[in-house]
Image (cartoon, rainbow, N blue to C red; front, top):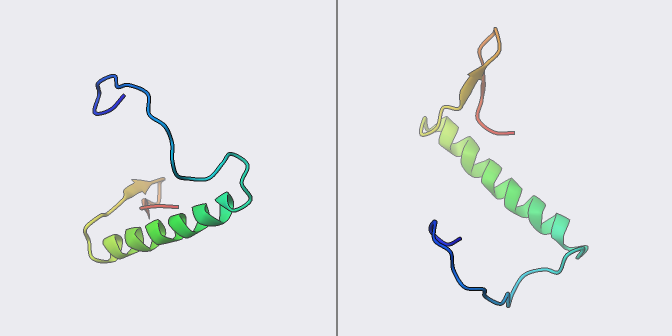
Length: 62
């Protein structure tokens, strides 16, 4: 589905093959960048997260 509508098949020209040993490292780089962006958004009160538990602990990302 593309934008909620069925689409024709397309060939993949870039990316990593399944099982590539480089994949976990690229994931960690991307996850680290996302974590930094989320932390900055929380500090600037752009995103507040959710209050969880009886003590109302705020969780914005893991």
